[in-house]
Amino acid sequence: MNYQQTLDWLFNQLPMYQRQGASAYKIDLTNIKLLSKYLNHPESNFKSIHVAGTNGKGSTSHLLASVMQEAGYQVGIYTSPHLIDFRERIRINGKMISKKEVIDFVVKNKAFFEQHSLSFFEMTVGMAFQYFAEKQVDIAIIEVGLGGRLDSTNIIQPEVAVITNISLEHTEFLGNSLAEIAFEKGGIIKPNTPCVIGEYNEQTYPVFRTLAKLNQTDLHLANQENSQKKWTTDLLGDYQQKNIQTVLKTIEVLNQSKWKITKDALKKGFQEVVKNTQLKGRWQVCDSAPKVICDTAHNASGLQLVMQQLQEQDYNQLHIVLGVVKEKNLDLILGLLPTQAIYYFTKPNILRGLPADDLEESAKHFQLKGKAYKNVRIAIEKAKNRANENDLIFVGGSNFTVADFLLLAN
Image 1 (tube, helix red, strand yellow):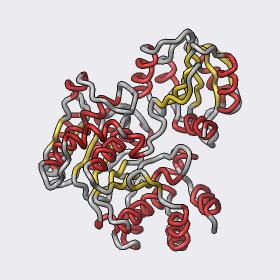
Image 2 (image 1 turned 90 degrees about the vertical axis):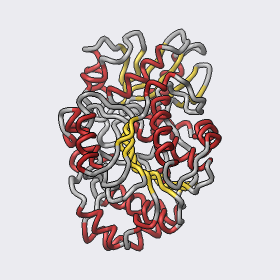
Image 3 (image 1 turned 60 degrees about the vertical axis):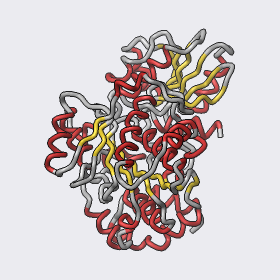
Image 4 (image 1 turned 135 degrees about the vertical axis):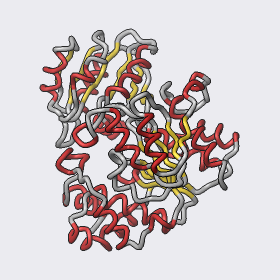
């Protein structure tokens, strides 16, 4: 198998949530435990930090990785989904796993994968854990895929668990209330493992407190009142200040044990996130005259923050290229979008993508005016042709819309 054949097999052999949604979601840790045993428990051979949450877990993971790198550690990072290249999911000090290592892992273990009908996510988690163990990383930042309690990553014994925040998302799997979702995400809280909570409210805090008590461990609450005190970071979204407070509390907890992370490492780590980790798609400015910005925010709470920041920008006319997935609750998100923008409704290039015509029709009920285009490439072209140099083009609505756009820009 060559690299492309390996990817095709990974993506097509078995259902994957990224393409198919609910039908690919396995609410069970049986398979990942089987795989871990088969691989000789690689997750027990490296230290880790486990990161869950509705929004900000990707940015928080990359901020942590950058700071730890600046502190002199060799840092693995596992995140999902990828935007351009599958190998973005598995990196050490910003460098992606090699194509050869992806091929070798799949070829060597393919019979086992097929025998036990492992999911795409289970296979990639196993690949990441094996890679980090073989490369003897000092620490790995492991981002939860979906939920927490029953997520395939939840077989690690981390130095610290981090939960960024809770809002309504993936209710078909995680529950219909903030408390139910907090219980699922709080499933990464483990005995004698400190847990950092980035943001909380009267519905989620009692859940976290109960789980911490059951696990005989301590909760450490990030001081979000300090998020007004701006730290300099190359991640341009104002919302990153909340993630920074979560990271500061996490580093404080780590420094209470054997880890040594200085203020200089914090400062430089925050300033060099993109360089150190290759993070993409978070309030990423991709062009000027007209300015083009993309952001992967895709649920109500995330989009609300991004829309607030859009309002603070200077422009003559706002153009929004918008594409979402089929299971998205449009009533929750379309009401957040500005009515004065010109819209270019489109469909991300995945099976789960909502047809652009359907999105346009739903948007009419919210007085959002624009036209439908069959793919992101055409939508971007139309937006750029129509926009003047003092206008602003925003691309978003889904990880996959941003991925299609970045592929074009790449």
